[in-house]
Length: 362
Image (tube, rainbow, N blue to C red; front, side, top):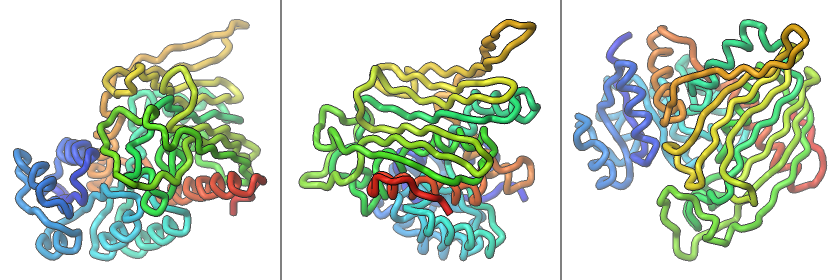
């Protein structure tokens, strides 16, 4: 299959990366759907997108030649839109997080299996050059078995607006636990996505009404809006394989600066993938690095791996992989079965934080 035709649902900030990734892989974006027609028209202008619609249903009906759908909406709408697209015979690429909870993700997985269509998510950090460099060392056996890892996405001041859908649990499903699953996913990717066993976690709600901790992305505040999600969390996950993982995520937490990393300890070598942001927290000011820690000839050796800088943080590359995978030119960088495991861990984080007790993950 070539020259795939794609429709995008949602003309928000991530639409640019989806569009660029699909285009890079040779697909054609022919339609966009958004309840805000003005925003949809603005995005379509200059990109040769002729189909402008309010809903996914309208788009599918008007574009019978559509091969795939991209979903970029508030989290609450991921499941119904993904299932609608799958049941219409379309491949689906969806923004993170996959769903509001594991039960929703299980329904999406079943729908993809029944439709026999590809379902992928924008776990873009897997496509970052640093992550792909490290995974080669892991797959070649250089690292050995990863016994333990630490996944962190720490923002000093990064609450995405106040009172909008990000800070409204009914629309988002939660705060940084569900909004920043990237390093958790990346650590699990490096570890081979083992089956989780137990989790102990805590969550904090400090600073959620303090606009000094707002992020730098220009997301507007909603007057008299809701801020009923957590600002940070800390957790430890154990796996049935004997592996373990520490997780730390925050939108607002007293820290030197925004820091994003996965560190791991293997039986042959350790390693670290890191994105160190400047004070402003903007991608263009970040410094990316990856390193291997090992021992050679009785000496402790730290090996720096040089990679190209990717200011899209793998977003364009991951979207390209979706199209290439449909065409049989690449293996999918992520699978819905993995997304289900991820959502089970996220569910357990909230359950443990609420009960203040360890939770078994089934």
